[in-house]
Length: 349
Image (cartoon, rainbow, N blue to C red; front, top):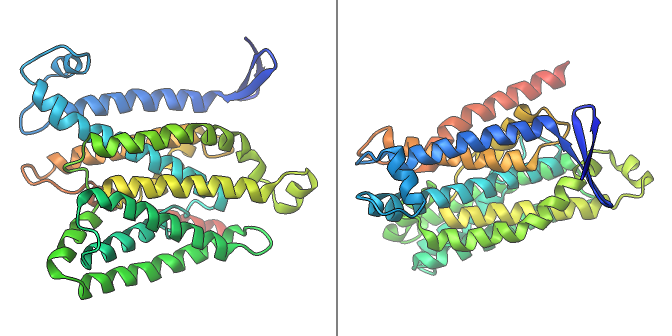
């Protein structure tokens, strides 16, 4: 393997294969990995009983200890689900924002999350979905239908980024109203159970959720690698892309579809954890200072945000435990307002 230095990049070559590595993105990814590892250890250490980091590492390495049950059976499955949900949301947000070319776009803004929510709440409130194992399938189906509906309505001889965001916001508002109707008209007891799911929580999460979500993320790796390579193509305007012979519509469709699938699966595993998909890509972009949103850094940032938010949700008001979606909402709502103000100032110049 040989390397060729470029400004801000390193071109790696192995035989006929070659790719560009953005050096600051790689450094940001390494830093995020270290902070994420520390946060995971802290989450496994802290709880009703405090476990030392050495004991936690020992349990993770398979060594028996007095806290093996607490760390390995109670805390670790929850942390694993949080990692996978955050990774899926961070990657989904990066893909959708890249397609829309808008930092305000995200699964929870363009209708995907609300599609999953309305479906689960409606089916639960009217007794169609009763078992907890059926909820993920309903959420995935609802998110996929809502996301594809937004994409189709935004299509007019190609996907227009502004139409995609505006139609997504309109669909989100409509689905939010429909969810309220389901909550008020459905069975009271079932509606209360749906309200708990709506907050987005990792409480009670285990390897059942982690298993299928992990397989989805594993299957998404090849498509994510293709998307990372195609990101530069969709940054061109349509006329330039056509002149270069790029199949822009297919690229946008593939990236949007992957983002919709990942966001829907994340909602199925933990409920609607708001604002993670919105904030993670922008944080990653500022850390990496790259031309395009770095997908790997976005995935790591999403995982870090969810695991850290869940740790805060468990310990801020202990022994009372908050849903993780409440914490991400408290942080994400001001961030969304800041983005809106920033974009308005930018457009007025």
